[in-house]
Length: 458
Ligand SMILES: *Cc1c(COP(=O)(O)O)cnc(C)c1O
Image (cartoon, rainbow, N blue to C red; front, top):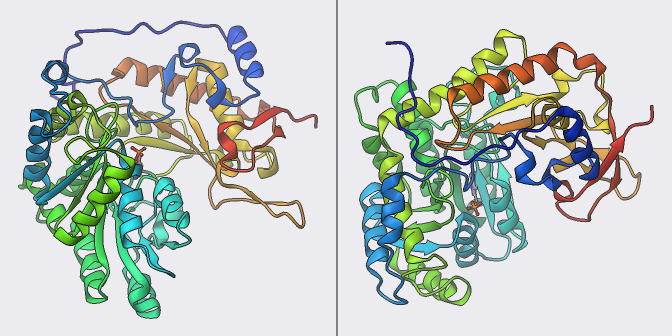
């Protein structure tokens, strides 16, 4: 059969509140034309993020009831610890309340004056945790990654030539090479096993730690199985184990491929690093057998990590994102190709060619998808990453102007995707009618969360 069905039945439902375009116009104006300031109940289909938004399975909810909330040595910790060790092969597992806490601990332990980290593309919390210590994060994606319409099976790869040159230039100032799988900031694009192996071989020969940012490790492993010669017959679990076997450490947000609503962990091989990490953990997260999570969270993650590796789940997951993108491509909607594992990234600069970057075409497009169909995506462009030069007052624009539609795991069905595609195609048909925005308020940091706008007068 050609049709790939959702590999689950629905046991508990959460109603969506229907709204009209008129109502949404009022809601958006009140929110200062910023979708972060809209209430979730006013959204029909929420593609803001795939982080912490997964539906849990009946087995996960049953595991929640088995949560052991003992302060020290809880049964739930040992179940969690054993599951993480058996999937990753790492001997040491340090629980944290989410991914960024694992990052914070790792970078504090590795910190030295002038430390440098090199990655395929550092995720924003990873970069922020590095820069907060006055250390430096360098992104070296392959050149294909910066051209939205350029096809490449492993657009998440690191540029190995540049990596070798950068390692040679900075020597032992490079504390770690961090490979983010899949590469979230680069569009949810996978990294090949070959690239991972070679990047870590180079890192090791310069004494740098080899780190995997493992948030979407299962999606990456599935792409390797589908696209990399020699892996067709390996199970996703075997491929995931091989990926982890190449690394010295990994950080994980269980809000992604943990299929849980909160949680994370740091894995290590080195006892000495682990001892330092645990000291920090106790200071900021909690005792080493819960580290910021409740026992029930660790139970849900232990179960989720097993379910996320089910191949019928991954086939449905990756196929539904691809199906979404095919529908949009059939109407000529510009986007990053091929689609990544967890999201569609619309190319707003090409979609709204007539709106200058100063008038925030990404924000305009995200807002129109909400007005037209109650869909919430997120601008990843000038609002999020544009930097104003304090001297000239002019804004420097990031390389791409995107709207990300992240697909929560196991939450929406095919008809939700069909509806979303219909909305986007309809907006695309009348795109020349859309008008720009003007920013009326911006905070000094992370302005996208609280910025306010109004329709541009011109
Ligand atoms: C979400 C994410 C993180 C941070 O995890 P949180 O649980 O949100 O703190 C780090 N890296 C990547 C690639 C992510 O997607």
